Length: 416
Length: 209
Image 1 (cartoon, rainbow over the protein chains, first blue to last red):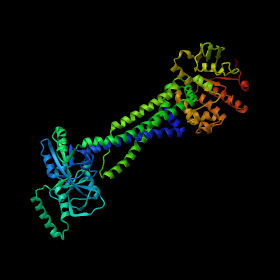
Image 2: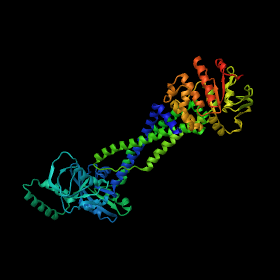
Image 3: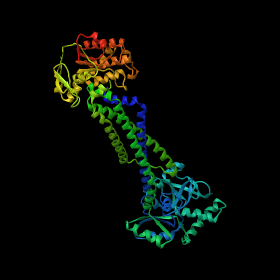
Image 4: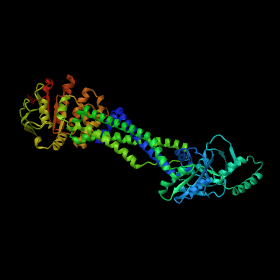
């Protein structure tokens, strides 16, 4: 027999009250940890996806849409811009790296991005298998794409027009998988990267229409390339230009220049994301406040339960004093009851948040077609648990006050 | 063995002052203190048990002056050397009979007496109740458990406050006899205070307040 045993027996003696205390506390702990982790993970994921892209230049329209489309790859592009115009920006001395990007097609819902081999530098994505693309119609897959579609080096596929998985017809050209990137947990994991020329080719063929046979097809393609080289490229379009600056000066000058002097727009991903989080942050805050309110209520329930026990069972406690128990031992009995309930709630709460988040992230991963690493910030858990402990300790302290003022003789003679 | 000297008590200033006759009890002499309600019987019992401090006078149990101990020492002394029986015996309702006795031994620091529990319960005719919860016991069984809780740690002094008041005639004689026997077996002193005239015949040593 010891004090822990007595406390636990006391808890088990009133299963309903104990369950209520634990349940309320569990909900608040689970909710607080889940919402904080969800918030932290999504923020980190978005920031991760922004990579080193300081500026996006694209067609005029919503800057947020431009960023969502060209950086996070979750929205439709605003339109196209002239490749020549974009090239002028690349030449600016404040620009360290400027990479053109063109959209057009998808394969089973995964976007095919036309760019050059420097595209992967933004994401520090290295080739895991195979090699980088060298000529048109060669593609390198992001790791999630390769996993989800079970594609290997040498596999070929036909792209579908547009960015949506369903509908529209397939383009007749075969893309060839020549490489697969290592997993980066960035947006490139769910992209199919190919040279800009692939996109142009596919769509120019579209205009030329119909190829009678494979033989003539090859000829047609060769001729086409020749035509490309002879042409002055001034009709070529891209979706956007991803820019990394040499120093922050670029951020001050270039966006304004582009927005006022050209028919293109420049959007700053970091700024747009902050604006976006400003909106979603309200939801996170609201849920956090609700969770803290539940925490307050659950500590109140714990207090009431303990206080009730101290009051109703004053005789039992006084009796223990005649057994030789010190005041401190009585306090421990009450406090341990509170702590056992709290630790049970923390344990269940953590498990619940883990299970809940597992499904939430599975859903998110499916929706974004990208594996999202859960980032559980330890400081967040510590913050939540500290608050829980503060509230519980407060509840316990208030509940044990009657013990300190207990008059053993009076209780024993009045209960007679 | 048990001595009280010049005990007086006052609940609050301006309240009436209780004064009590001196008690001088030798080894294993049971004492019955009779008195009407309101005369201060329980007060005297609590003073002897060390739960109340008298206004004046002192209580000495087996050579230890209770008034000379600090509160922590007194707590420990009470737990180890005194057993209390009440009119209604509450025990911890979350625990079984056996667990209550174990808890009692744990707090008085006499866990070695655990082995005596089965014999004691047998002597008190509640050996079948070991694993029962408190609220499953009858009034008579509860009173027997009260005695068990008061004697399991082999105290120097057993103090009983109206132990038979809520029992019928049969149980009254039975329980009181058990209490006297247990005091004898454990070589403990016994003081019973009551207004219950039914138990008078069991005592030679009677003090009327």
